[in-house]
Length: 419
Image 1 (cartoon, rainbow, N blue to C red):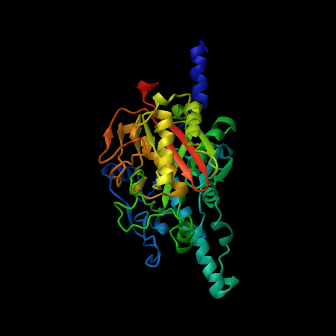
Image 2 (image 1 turned 135 degrees about the vertical axis):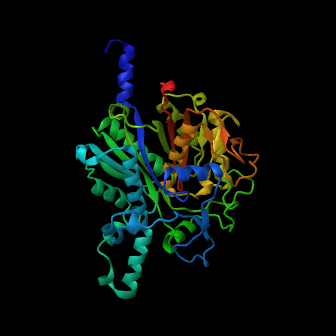
Image 3 (image 1 turned 180 degrees about the vertical axis):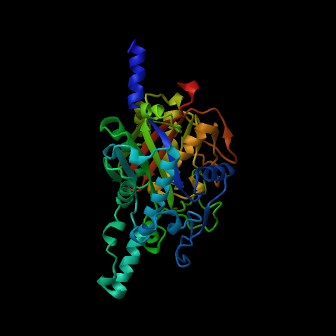
């Protein structure tokens, strides 16, 4: 190195992690463009549950992945071996790798990793096998029940399918787990000799058993109108719609991405996580500050916040106050486009990261469809009615999970003018 500046640049390239591929299977579409156009149009993908008859359930609407035919979208032999959630993950992983231009068979297999997030595991597969057990006896239960329900099944199947034999894992932290999984992949790239990782998450628990488990927490919306049933930060917030799907990302060290002239959607710049106990005040503000510190940024460097948006009055107030504590009351644009899909649990936060990266790319903040008025006790600048054009370089994505999980991830763009 000829100078200290060159040394700093080299160190940055060695440790900076970029997103080079994206694949999604979301209620808003099965490809990046469809999802982005639906988000910008504020087009709700929430509809009546069709995977079973929800007539006897208090919640009858959800975000469902459209036109997904497992037999034509994942290897046929894997269909009877896997849950719908894993099939969505396999499809998204295929898209992400294709998008990245990576040919995995040309890379050292022990230098590629998989880290995904899952909240519920294979609930639909497990329910069907339990029905067979009690209706017909143990000999009717599939041998794949032993693995298809397990939280790590998607990680395992993606690893096997693509020959990724490096460090693999799964994070189970409800909605927050999607950000934590991405952060774990970044750590592997920085410290474990891994050169590439597939990360993110999907979830799918729209089965009678899966929905019943979700109902037990009392936070789901029972409104039968997809346009108004999920409205975070609104005075009339009444809970959220559930959903299925998510997104998977290919992440690499920036130096490697540059060497192969790969496209780059953005940088995973910083992360922090915390746990909120019932007797403690909100930890979200401190988690945000630690994520910014991890990214070596100040609050003024952030251009937009993608909120968790639980649409529960107490949770909305706590999130809004934490954002205002860090950025000032109404000091930064805030959005929650997940109202179009419902909360996707382990897949929701990775999809928010994708949406944030597209926002940075196109310099536009999507609006929060459904919310009409911001509650007086939520001191935030929530983007309403239509997208807001603004020059963007850095976004903060927030996620919280039931029980106290809290996570924040900072992403930035990689335009040449910003470097």
